Image (tube, rainbow, N blue to C red; front, top):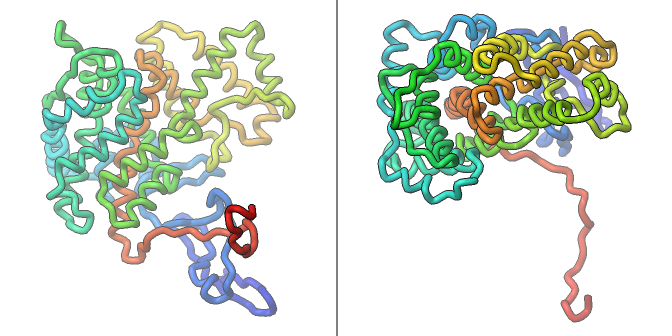
Length: 428
């Protein structure tokens, strides 16, 4: 197997080293291409460009494989807690019992927000999008810890890690309570990470509220399934912003903004909209399946296919089970789930979908779970962000600890006008 690729250009040969990862994926290292040839590569959307060497997450899209630090996602979802997975992503190994207890304590004792930060939430319109509040509050948190967010100080990085993991669920719950006009529910240190969040979201001061363990476990599974997904748009944003040397709070806030987009964290909203559209139409599900096959029809099946996976998204297989459990417990039945099941059946058995690798992805079922819990659609990406948070932190820390990190600065191919001379305004 060759260890170099050769590029023939203007009669000269450029030899680029081949880099190989632990799972056998290969890359052509073009780091010195421009300095040697004066030429750059052109890759819209970076679909063929490796931006980092990473030890965090591995995806084999052709075979539907996802693992974190070598552990298959199937094992982590069924056997680990969310904070165990967060520790794994951030620190590289599963924690011992003592290490996990210490990590949980450090996160738990930081869940409270500064009391004067409540005025921050009151300043937003009641119909403000929760993702806008989450991104703003993440940035605002840094103003309260200016002596502890130095990105080059290991102790500050550790404290920022704990604070972000602890406080963002509180921020998310407070933003939700603000939007529905209910009083804030403070975090409880006697509850687990998922239980505490659900309690802050749904409890009210006037009566007791007990978190259903089945709902809490389903929610925790969702958090784990979203915890990291390699160099996606938001993770790459966190790395790019962090490469400038800015603190973790600002970098994660940028990741929240990237996740807000409908093509990223907002995809499950589009699934619910599609299912509602099918439900309230005069046509049956089969009609919409046929419409999806018609390239001249604007209708598209949302929640099918993935930029990376060319097989069934392994997260979708795992989340489907939780969807049935939660909906059966909370609603008994759901016509949207019935429509989704029929759509999935077509995708798994009809040549049109199989040939185009249009299998359900994680977004196809996650929105159904959030909806059954009584959450409004604009909260869906917020919950995605809470799950993705440890991945962002792990990616940021790996970027900071890599001695080869440089400030990110993509090149471009200029296609504007050639040189022109300035024309005085009265002659234009």
